[in-house]
Amino acid sequence: MPSQSVSTPRADILVIDDTPENLNLLSAMLTEQGYKVRSVTKGSTGLRGATAAPPDLILLDINMPEMNGYEVCEHLKANERTREIPVIFISALGDVLDKVRGFAVGGVDYVTKPFQVEEVLARIENHLTIRRLQKQLQTQNEQLQQEIRSRQLAEERFAKAFRSSPNPIAIATLEEGRFIDVNPSFLRFCGYSLEEVIGHTATELDLPSASQTLAYTIQKFQEMGSLHNQEVEFCTKTGELKTILLSIEFIDLANVQCTLLIANDITERKRLENEFISLVSHELRTPLTSIMGALDILGAGKLGTMSEQAQKVLSIATSNTERLIRLVNDILDLERMKSSKIVMHKVKCNAADILVQATEAMQAMADNAQVQLVVNPLNVELWADSDRLLQTLTNLISNAIKFSETGDTVWIGAEVIEDKENFLSASSCASNRLLITVRDQGRGIPEDKLQTIFERFQQVDASDSRKKGGTGLGLAICRNIVQQHNGRIWAESTLGEGSTFYVLLPLASS
Ligand code: ADP
Image 1 (cartoon, rainbow, N blue to C red):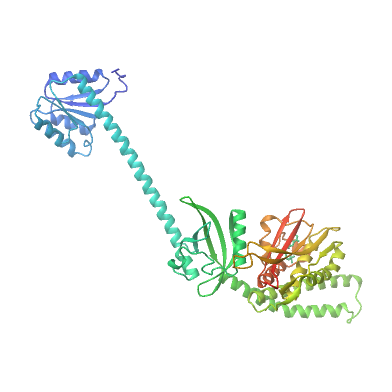
Image 2: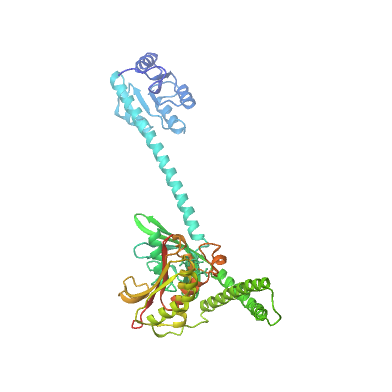
């Protein structure tokens, strides 16, 4: 075996033997092999040395005065600092019982004198290797324990955050949307027990207030990969309608694709907001009507003729008052629709008639803006409140004209399509629907605004209401009307190329 350099000894070995000849022989043999050797002749001295600076291995004689090898070994094993040091007994006592006792007090090996140098060296090397591996295992074990502890801690933290979150949180499978875990806030929010929720879908529990909204939300989520603060209405177990902001993310749980749903209950905030808006609007209506009346009197010249400049000022005041009245009326209209104070009077009506009427109503505006209107009416019957549907279409056409350039065209059309995805019905069979489209060549709508423009007061550009005279309520009203017809409204657009608004409605026969 090649000896190693003095600066890096192979291991530190303590030899305890009261016979100087043995001690010298062992020391010389081990030093030659590159070990660092400490040798002592007394058990008590050996114990002190081992405690002060624990060696990697101890060679221990048995027959010694004062304290024999067995006792020394017992002391070593009783001490925390020296317990793990491998002890090899080297003794002239060759009796089996001596060996057994040696092992019983904690020795790892037993060599009888006279010994073969190679054998002793081989045994030392073996036990040093075993000890090294033991140490490695111990370290790995400690690291694993540490990792388990930190994982347990992280899991505990996550579980606590999940359980005590004030926001309703649910985890559902991606494929079927079955709930696999929900937090106490979720149960409080929907009124169901854990047993009633786990394993079921939102639709099975009748949570979504309108199936088409949920279908649309899920479709959007799948297209975009995540969803943030989408306003959705939910029904609780007791039938109470709640408004939430829903965020959805994909998560992988042990190779099962899941969705993490986090809700923010804004029902109360919405109620207060609606109450405030409706109160303010009501309060505004009376003075506005009176201002408009006064402006009419002034405009009619009943109080004397006005200079040209005064007439200009009057015309600005009149158009802005009209805009305010429009805004207040829209707000009240929407509020009444939302609180179901407006009932849709659905009758059998002809789609072609409504499309033509809506186009005719907007013809003057189109002429003013030098935009061409092209209508392709379709002669099919549908169940609808024709006034409200007309209101929807005129609003869509008016927007299309507003956001078009001079010389552009707006197409109004309709077709009967097969509703394979069943956006409008809970049944699984496909059925025919009427799809109305209003397409323009205008500035287009950015992708991230395609959904929000259907919310109240949402505009692509903050200057839209000033520049285009809108209120930001038209599409919210349209969506409400369409939803009350069990329909769906959405938009597609390419920036700079134009937008298409779609209205999907059930046909009269279905
Ligand atoms: P407004 O009264 O402001 O038109 P709407 O609710 O009808 O209110 O529309 C909301 C916003 O959606 C508009 O202000 C505009 O920013 C955008 N928008 C609606 N229709 C179109 C369209 N055809 N092209 C481009 N942007 C549109």
